[in-house]
Length: 116
Image 1 (cartoon, helix red, strand yellow):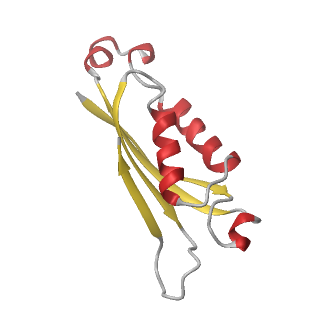
Image 2 (tube, rainbow, N blue to C red; image 1 turned 120 degrees about the vertical axis):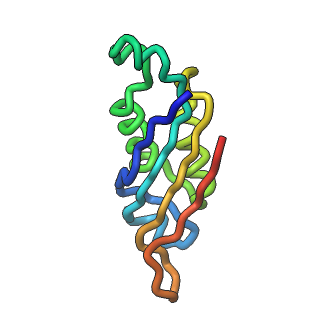
């Protein structure tokens, strides 16, 4: 078993509860850790024997960019669903960060982390 990690994927999306968050794109950052059996790819050195992280990255970007959710929890769940479309992915951890959250406190970001 092994992991494929995509870290720091940034994309603009329209997600949030507040009215202003539902009309203008804002930056999000996504990390995913895919649990994958990498044994065959380690032996063959063939992309067909592993999960293509470029394709997964594009699918995640598309979800953030084109779909709309109020909660980070739902966005993270949707990203996990897309990652699990490849049957070779047996588990996924998704972290979604809202980089400019609408809070009074000075924070670097807010985030949700889920495991499926």
